[in-house]
Amino acid sequence: MDTEFKSNKLQLKVTNPAAPRAFHRLFNNVCQAPTSGQVTAVVDMLQVLTADHVQNISLATSQQITLK
Image (tube, rainbow, N blue to C red; front, side, top):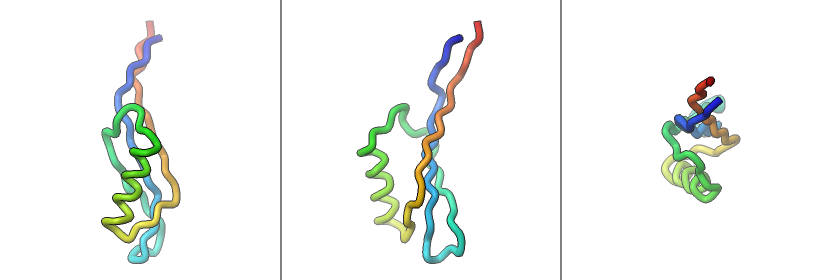
C-alpha cells in the first residue's frame, strides 16, 4: 500500500459577539506540515482582522492511498 499526501484543511471553531452560536472558519490547501508558529500566525491574524475568538483548532489531512 502506498500513501501520498493530497491536501490539508485547517478548521477553526470560533465565537463572535455578532453571532449567537459558534461557527467554523475553514482554510483549504494548507501546507503539508504546518508548524505551530504558522498556525499561531493564522489565529493571530484572524483575531486582528475580526472579532472572532478561537475555541478549537483541527487539521484534516487527505491522502491518496494506492493498494498493490
